[in-house]
Image (cartoon, rainbow over all chains, first blue to last red; front, top):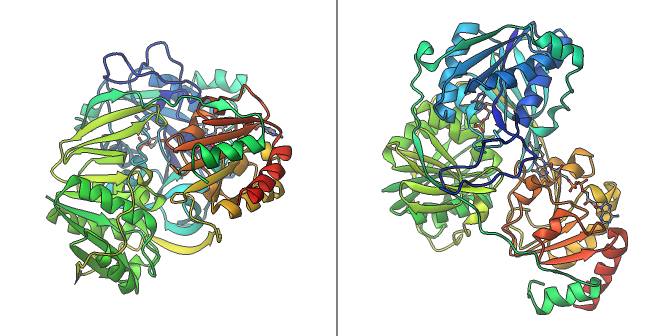
Length: 249
Length: 313
Ligand SMILES: Cc1cc2nc3c(=O)[nH]c(=O)nc-3n(C[C@H](O)[C@H](O)[C@H](O)COP(=O)(O)OP(=O)(O)OC[C@H]3O[C@@H](n4cnc5c(N)ncnc54)[C@H](O)[C@@H]3O)c2cc1C
Ligand SMILES: Nc1ncnc2c1ncn2[C@@H]1O[C@H](COP(=O)(O)O)[C@@H](O)[C@H]1O
């Protein structure tokens, strides 16, 4: 079984993003970029499935500018076998990404697509669900456990009330939540090996997919700033302030 | 304009987030209808019909909808959506799971997690863990939207007199089966709707120590939450997590205990009215957003807080 893992290049999770002065977006020039943390978890899960013998090949896919190659290399260093870059300068929104991925699924015929549950830049949390819809496949979203069996996947999902278990028909789309696993660090030899693994470059046009954004960003602003209040000297003062000043208890 | 709200429920009762979503629907304007899809869920439809501002309830009562599985439910939503200008669901794990699937079936984009309605086609949504607010316009003929419930007050559960209309089930693709759940049981208020939340972080050191928060939560009628670190360490279950990728809360009072204040945690609580931080490290970033900061070892502070609250009765 082949596994397809879409990996997105995003502003590193440790960077405190700044809104651009002209309010068109956030500053990304000279900002550290990394693989979306949820996608690292997705790659790790795929690699573990391969190590267990449940998968035979892992294909990492990234959609965006040429530098997404670096993100793909990270996935290759973690254990993916080859990469596909769908190169475009257009801001690809989840529906467009899902359509591109569908086109790749039709070419590659994977048994499983594992995505991150959410990209930490747009915070959309849509792509996996959309891809599953376009393919007519089962979806296991926000999963913290997956057991791949014969023609079926047993998954545990993190839901608002606790945990939920589903059995999905395969092929299926899974989206990784934080507690699915702890991604490995790529070792130096693996980083070297990854440099020799192939990356194919495609375009949305070649795949026949229209990626025109459906949603226009009119402006991006900073949220209202919270001012830090003062420190209190002790617990008694805290309770007094909450009661008589803030009047919340 | 006409807005369809997808109800979240457990076949017996309407869940709170549905009420906040109705308020967002009213902010868009026009008629508000609610879709109740479930199994043996007529009581839920009746409750939805009583919500103030709801004109109509569509009831799809059939076994495939029993557990909110996305595959059959998305087909049903896609079948009903063309009669509306907007389809809204709460940005809960339920809404996030099903609505994008319906959107793709209709070849429509989705606007996720809106925190304000500017006009019927323009919305505000937080991006980058709430470090930026984007104003976006959807150019699609039907707008599919998930709603950040903490940004909209709940609609009154009583006062409406909507008509209930039964609608047929859509096809059942039978792709997934529900095989069980493990839900946290608690006598305390629900995290996302509680007026007061007290959360513990890695500084709590163990699940057992979370018991120190309980008498305080009981006294204040508060919900208990946690940071990701506390959940990952296994101190408390996953549904306690507050943050960018957990629950978004905006209570009147949020008390962060032994939590450093990472961006991803702040994303889930910085819209709280009053924030209290208890941390032994006076440099902890949580103090930059706290209205009242207490620099103290939590194992000393919590028993005292319990005592002071008893006195302040
Ligand atoms: C993609 C992604 C998504 C994430 N999503 C979330 C999310 O949704 N929610 C979330 O919370 N995090 C999230 N995180 C994790 C986040 O970055 C932080 O790692 C996490 O919030 C830290 O939790 P903490 O503050 O409990 O732990 P720490 O950062 O370790 O802080 C512990 C604090 O406790 C204090 N302390 C220790 N002992 C005591 C004591 N005895 N008395 C008083 N104070 C004490 C310390 O001074 C310290 O400030 C996410 C991370 C990533 C990469
Ligand atoms: N441009 C992209 N390239 C590769 N994968 C992507 C891209 N955009 C989204 N994804 C995948 O879809 C997941 C969810 O993204 P989103 O729906 O934008 O929150 C991510 O975690 C990735 O796995």
